[in-house]
Image 1 (cartoon, rainbow, N blue to C red):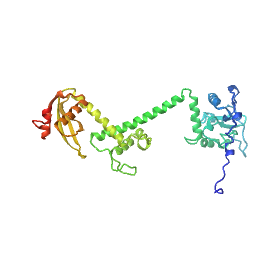
Image 2 (cartoon, rainbow, N blue to C red):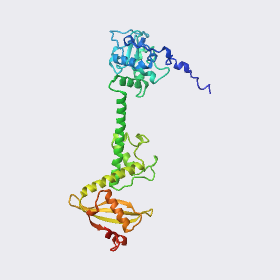
Image 3 (cartoon, rainbow, N blue to C red):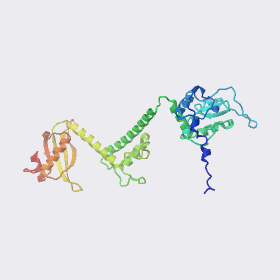
Image 4 (cartoon, rainbow, N blue to C red):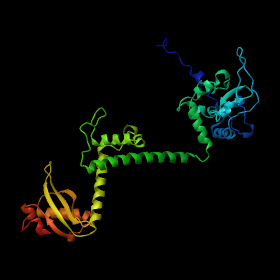
Length: 365
């Protein structure tokens, strides 16, 4: 195995970053800090309690960018390339530094924060020698900046955060929390919108196969995916883009939303009744599990002067005797703060326990 994999020398890789704790700099004198990047003490040599003070000092002063009429050339064959001060005014102006002592360029943000992300050998900008190949400088600058998640980008973002005095740790946490809250609200509103549509047209929520390979996952998931495709900001935070423990699509969440919609619907019905007189329509039957259930409907004149019938609820009863049904009706009416004395009409089926003239439910009103 050793002939295929070269041995890694840990001591050599960490020699540039491991510092003897006894040799760390404890005393801080901001006026004595070296401005020239070629002569600075590495940031890792400062004791952790004062390291941030050193960083803030260099960030406040800004990158070392001496403006000279001419910079020393480097003879390469017949050419003599040299540093150009116009680079200070380009996209690298916030971090590019020049050392007049060593005629080399450095990166301020990586000098300050590279040890937080990277340990070991790295490119010229990270080292004490700097970079001075002026004939290919722009190419190396662009390559060095790299992608969004490059080490340089992370260091640059940390430098911006530390330079913003108003951006405290608590503010960052609050902003992050607010972002999570906004994304959660968008996911919840999307699930509610889809649920309302399905409830309005009495469509089933669940699908026979809701797994990822399924081409028909049911109305709820399919409409939610369609909603995300039509609204890109919503699509970025729902389904596969949402945290796996916070997708708000499980059957329990769907039932909670449906129950919440039912409560709001009943609230609107009671407000439309406006405390006026009403009639009741009652019927009972067995469900598929052979449990007795009773349905209650209100018949009343709404605020527009129209006679309407509204379904109030479906409750299980222990038996279908007249007394048990009466108790269930009174209990259901009390849940919605409806008084039985407001009843001005009753409607039942022809069963003896419902319409019986002697001991039926109608006579117990």
